[in-house]
Image (cartoon, rainbow, N blue to C red):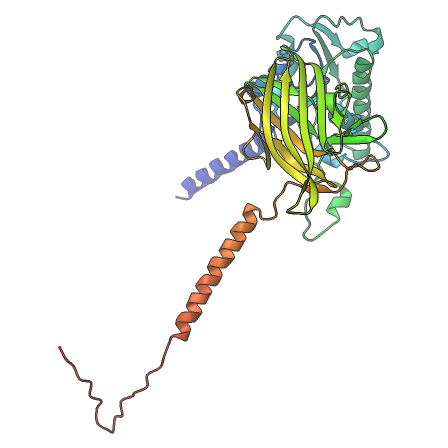
Length: 454
């Protein structure tokens, strides 16, 4: 019996060791590109999920469908997600991942995969080389100014970064900062030469776990603090009537989907490069029209115009002026007009803000299709804020938010409380109805006679 138990215990121990070894057998893969809309429509819930080799290949497919295919693969010997958290700040006067963070935040498209199997990352170079007839450049061809790059042909740059040979924190920070500088210089040179590209940063194997001395000195219970990446900083779009600003609009993302296949991301053109044409916008004390015109926003669309219509009226019921966002129009190639109705309003002195606005029925503010052409479009606007009246100092006024006070969670709490109070009230009433006997048997006297009748 003891021998059987020993065998079972050994099997369990071996299985645990194998699971523990495979649990860390993955590395992060970071991808950023100068071309937008590469992964539109893709689910970005990769936290806690290990990407297999075939899944990685499927995610890389949009890279091979670009008009200009220039891929830069930065390969390191060891890398883990812990490296980004441990070296996220200045470490021994070094700044690891500083250029990488800026590149990802300012890129038109990016994809961060926290956990990819080492089989997928180690064979990534071979997989990319098999996809097409590349002009392959290796790290031996530094500096990039000396490279004879033909932008009309697909180019593949294979950069093997210096290895992390030392186990010292200072030495590792220095190597990581140097690798970050190499990646930053290389991609910056590509931008300066006007060459669109997609960069991939990964490693052959995961780095070993380590602890910081200043973290291990703390004792007792502590909360794990996670630094949330700051969103890309955009500036609001302003429209003037010649003398002062009459319209301010802001969003962190403006995306459209046509017939569930064509994805159009208008964020960069609207709030970063300002290539959008807003000269047709009109504003007055009673009516405001925000006209945003885009040239060649996506394949198959030559021109696209978004028209936001708002009105400002005095309402006797509230004895004040309110502005209403009446409708949104999408005009494609000056031929097809998709019209959406909106039920958005705010006091005339305020701006309007909503976290999610679009055609999705789960959004707090919705655009409802008003004609047949609108059925083909889907709209997604994140962190939307707009003001078309009473603008002062070129700034948004106090925002009237779309979030209602009584959320589903509050209603559930109120209903649960009401139910518990009702049960308590009913129980108290039952207790109050209890009475004691007013007649008792006297063992020394005559028995109590209770007449019984049929």
